[in-house]
Each structure stands twice: as C-alpha cells, then as structure tokens.
Amino acid sequence: MLLSQGAINFLDRCIWPRVLTQSERERSIDEIVEIEYKSGDYVCRKDEIASSWIGVVSGFLRVQDSTKDGNSIMFTGVAGGGWIGEGSLLKMEHRRYEIIATRNARILHLPRSMFLWLLDNNILFNHFIINHLNERLSQFIAMVKYDRLRSPVARVARGISSLFHPLLYPNSDPVLHLSQEELGWMVGVSRQRVNSALGELQDQGLIQFGYSTISIIDFKGLEKIE
DNA sequence: TCATTAAGCGTTG
DNA sequence: CAACGCTTAATGA
Image 1 (tube, rainbow, N blue to C red):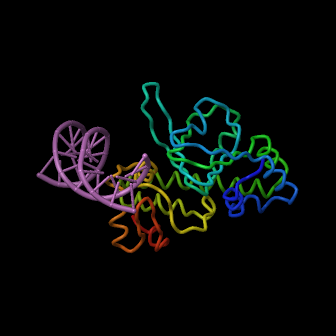
Image 2 (image 1 turned 90 degrees about the vertical axis):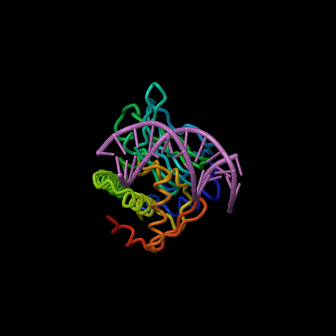
Image 3 (image 1 turned 135 degrees about the vertical axis):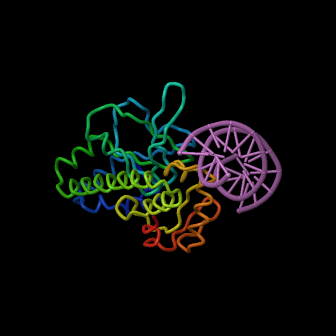
C-alpha cells in the first residue's frame, strides 16, 4: 500500500524495521495498511480475533473494556509513536478489550501473517518483541506501584515520561500533543487533578504545558518524582 | 473535615 | 469546535 509521508517518517523512527533485512523490510512496508480514523471510531472491537499489529502515527488510542450497560474502564492509552496489540497476535484468541481513537488518528496495520512470519524467521525481530513486551510489563508494574502510592502528581509524571520511552515511543519531538483529559484517562486521575499536577510539575521546572501540548524539560527529574 | 471527582458552563486558542 | 479552567454539589476516606 502507498503510505503517506507522515507514515514513512514514523517508520523511519521506529526501531523494529532496522533489524530486518532489506527484503523483509520492503515486504513488511508493502503489506502495511494505513487507515485514518475519526474521533470516536473503533480501531478494534472486543471479541474479534486480532488481525494486525497496530502502529500509531498520530492521534491517541484508548484501550478499554466495556460492559453491556455502556460503562467503560480505561486500561491504558497509546500516543503517537507507539505500537500495540502484539500480545493479542501471539495468543490466538479473541480480544478482551477494545481500542478507540479519542481524536482523529492515523494508524498503521501490519497484518498478522506478516508479523508472525517475521517472528518465525528473524531472530532480531524476536529480540525486539521480547524487549518491547518486557518494557510494557515494566510499565504496568510501575502503574500498580504508583497506584498504591496514590499520589496523582507522581502518576501524571510517570504517565508523561512513559510516553517518552525510547523503545516504546521512538519520537524525536520533545513536545507531546495530548489533552489533559487523555492524560487523565491514561493514568487514572480526573481532568482537574491532571491540570493541577501539570502546574506543580511546571513549577518544579520539569515540564512546560500549553494548549493541548506538553513539553519535557527535565526527563530524568520527571522519572524521579515519587 | 478535607480531598477528589463528575458535571456544567463560560472562555480560549 | 475542542480543550481549558473554574464553580458547584456529591462522595468518601
């Protein structure tokens, strides 16, 4: 499929294509399907069998579970730069959650067959995926830890710095385009608490935030917040 | 009592 | 028009 310039730039920043041989890389990129979603669109529905590995060029995805009565619980969010869904591809099973675009989003789908083929044939790709899974696991453990600490400022700090994880989010841009509401969904605090936490972090000189944007000033300092 | 939140609403970029 | 910031009433530790 013909990819947009944004998607090509995005793939250039990603780590995994670099570990492929040239022909594997060309095949993979050739099989990638680029789709634009509008705010509120489903990227994946619950109970369907995962058919692709999902890359976020731009936008924000909510990963959530929904009950029959329409309530939903946010698990996590994926911002531009990240890939998600490898877990569901590995286990041949129905997805237990759904993925929704919270605003207009540009998404890449690498088909399951290609993903599994790379896994079977390229040991370096295997290493990358193990690493990727391991990093995500660390993030979830950290999430539980900060949940116990129950300090909203630490959780917000954690949420922001996780979006700058070099392996999970290979972005070059030090400015995040993320609303306070989306950040709140990610770390499990309310919009107004995110707002005041951002204020505190800004006062400490760790970040700067503006309309729908957050810039990192001191990444190391952010990670130290407890 | 005090902190936090959802909901509503006027303002702003 | 979506995101922000503020107010208010409800909630719960």
